[in-house]
Amino acid sequence: GPCVARTGDWYAWFGGANAIEAGTLQQSINIPAGTAAELTLWFNIASAGDTLAGDAFAMSMDGSEIFLATAEDYAMYNGYTEVVIDVSAYADGADHTLLVSGGQTTTVAVNFLADDFGLSVDGNDIVGVSEILNQEVVVFAYPNPAQDVLNLQFNRQIQGEAQVTIMNLNGQI
Image (cartoon, rainbow, N blue to C red; front, side):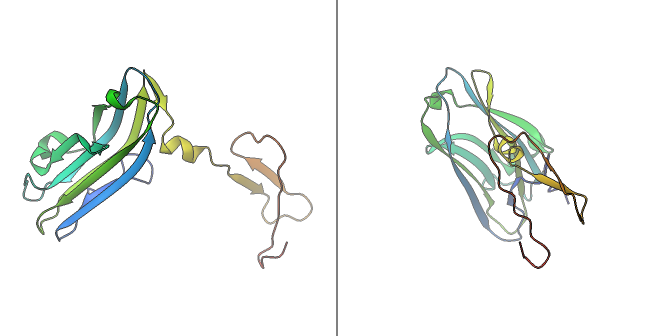
């Protein structure tokens, strides 16, 4: 259907049920000290149901609303649209609570989608979820099966000592 990620495999989806629904995501984020900070996301109202103002997607920082879209805004967000939110007031080097919520007030499905969140301070991108996932160490072993020689290839440079344990299909070392 219309509910897919903008990029990658992960995205936030609110609504879409044939029931009254409310959902939330909450994350503590540290916004480094600076003069200008922006939170960005790509937002999509994939279907608007009965286009009711009560069917809504909202974001708040430390309890203060920073973004609101309702099903009435369907025409503006029909398809992923970049949203840029000024969060300069929170650029103080402290932890802040970002709350993302959405839902529908009737049994007519409304779909709010959010993807590719980002944060920049003074024009510098701050590490986001995608970058953190890309830093995980992935090891490729070949050939498989191996007899005398096994090659290990890492997706990034490894520094320091590493311990490698090889197990067979029965879990034996």
